[in-house]
Image 1 (cartoon, rainbow over the protein chains, first blue to last red):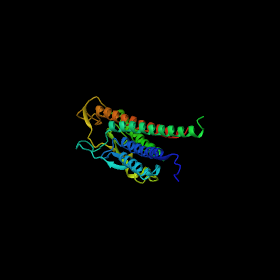
Image 2 (image 1 turned 180 degrees about the vertical axis):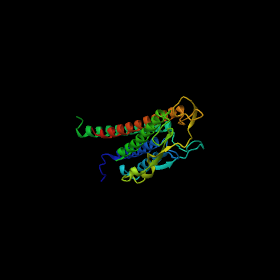
Image 3 (image 1 turned 135 degrees about the vertical axis):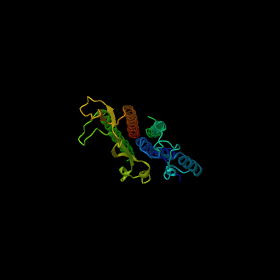
Image 4 (image 1 turned 90 degrees about the vertical axis):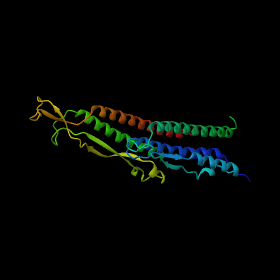
Length: 128
Length: 143
């Protein structure tokens, strides 16, 4: 008997994506905080490839939201390409853009979850 | 929780940048100070930043502990630069040759430093705002 998967793949993916975006925000905040720290190497999180791979696998196997539980962000430390100054590899412009982008995509995820829940509520209330 | 961790990171930076601004203010205020409690002209102060991850000892994300670092002021260093000698025979602290030992502070340098510190402060405020906005959005789920 097929299980009734109320939330399914979408909510699982969005939940994980929000979780990782919050972690990403932490990394961006750390980079901005250390914009003037000598020898500091900027941190970047790579998780989009992991999510994409998990999504493809879950489609192939027909599994639900649990496919995303094990996705983890990969921490990348950037070194300063130039040999000038204090060897700090933070680029404030890039970080501010990443901050805005991350926030917008987080908002988008919450909105899609809200729509999905709204749809479920509509069905539960028999279209009232 | 993640939101508060990222706010802690930004708060540590706000604290450090404010201390840096205070140091710059002190340097500008004392640009012509020839008498100090420790004797001689005022010496320029400089803050030294150091990244820190002991904010996150309790963090759930084991991996983020080394990755997301806050910042703190490691030390406030007194500049070793010798005082600037200015010819001003009428000054009460002038020596026999009429030279006065003035603090070795460059106003342009201080103003430029002040602008960087203030910009960095603004950037951290933006990061706190973004974290707050994200947390509020999460609270709205299912409303």
